[in-house]
Image (tube, rainbow, N blue to C red; front, side, top):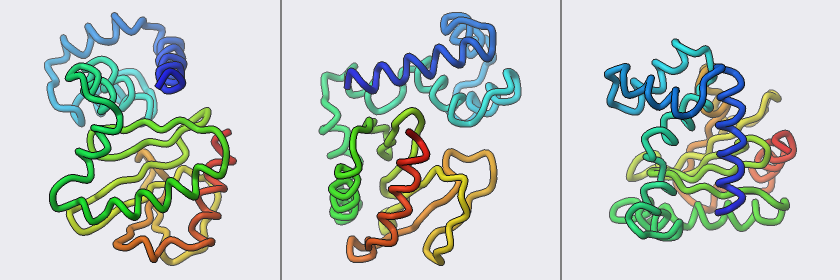
Length: 191
């Protein structure tokens, strides 16, 4: 988790440079905005400070200490506990998809794994993928890759989102070498 803390600290430092405001000033501005919901705050930060979706999302989580890691730390839970919570109940059957992807991604090399409240973010210098249950019956792999992906399973996402592509999955059997190659390209591009 030290690597993840370092990555977030670097991202926050970059946000401070972009906005000309310290984290304390940005947190105070969020509190004064009257916005209370995560999405409202994120949108307000984008509009007010002209930062991107990912930066606004991280800043919102950092200011509110609402990301999975912060929430886990505050409650004394571990990152593994957060992951277990993500795949609990009706979403438990989706965990094999997560495990198969993570086993393949582990072979790529070093990267940071950051469990959030409902998904897991994977980062190098920047986020290259997000994965987790989208609904009780569908898992979603998000990819950050500027390249055009020629694969009918891979769906482009409108600009402004946290990823450029999503891949809906319902079974670990859908994960093949071609899909892993897409993830590897995203990994390489984030490095």
